[in-house]
Length: 509
Ligand code: GLC
Image (cartoon, rainbow, N blue to C red):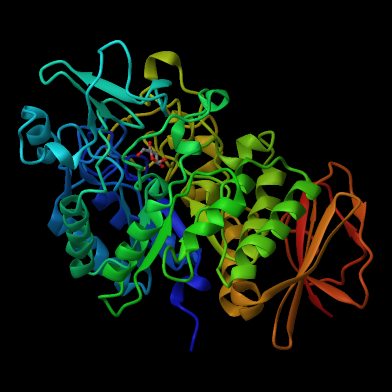
């Protein structure tokens, strides 16, 4: 059997609000995504993951869905979506969309009906509990704002569970009607031709109806980072069966926000749950060779050992961009691109990282997100004009170096971060070793993390120097530099040293 398409793929995440505005309202839209499809295709990725574009009151920037089967007018229309999908497919790429199954918006007609009365037919689509208005039914903690994960509904005198905002009530997946309705939302998009889903906080959907308290010492931690109920696995198998009704190999990649690779690995099931799971511990790792060696070995021990395939991500719409996390260093961000695109597994890029973007500083009066994540959601600068290719002043301020990071300028500059990402993705495309080969000989020698990727006769060596001084690296045999994150010495013999905060891909000479 040949490998599924997503094993060797590189995926590009688009946060639609921040990508490109074509209407002048300052919010990115689907037409803006369509406008820049050549940028994405030229970058050399295989698939796009689009964060939510559903109808939404935007309390959580679209992760509060009011209609799973429609496009919010701020982003466009279903016709515009179909056109975008067709143009993605024309370029030989695939499209994954976000799916938010744990909670809806409080404006979703299901919740409006549920909330109307205790007798409502949809009441038990959500999780309601009796109690005293001063005492939430259990000690679970919301992600933002921090505090009890419950909201008191004064009209019907009950609490409802919401692990995020009060405007994001949790669905009750123990109710078969909810399961059936949510499966239908998947079919709606699969019928339109989407190639898979990124499943939002998927580890939260199964819940013990007794809603047991967590131990007292864990009550400072938001429940999203703790919850690991076995019921979720049966739900995942059910969702997987829906995807398997389709023969174009739709992918399910789940956000499993558990900060332990062992526990994340369980969500692959026995090859019958998630195809891929986000593994966040490496995203939180410092810029240190030993830390990365540890994560690479964990991926082997916990994920590869069960025949599953890892995924890797450095930046997304919920966390400070990796350039910022790594001390704002452009050299490190460039070296990290080599790491991301050469590890064994499916890499996920976050739009803007291919331009070396860092977090924007957001003045207090411009802050939008209740979770404090605006900095990584700054708009993408497309060109050097005053609005950088946006039709209106963006909803968030530009990142401070929008001038140097604009995509058009970088496309013309062979030394740019964009040019580096293009070289890396193009090498990946031509190299079975990098796409689906094994990872071997991983080791750290004096701040340099080195490993080999192999497939058949093909062999590449990757060396990343995490130190701020140059370091020696002894390798058996003769090697030639294929790609250097600082652009130096490509095509020449490897001389046994790696520059500070620099990564090399070497091929046997
Ligand atoms: C996920 C999303 C995040 C959202 C949350 C609630 O963690 O990535 O942006 O706020 O779920 O849906």
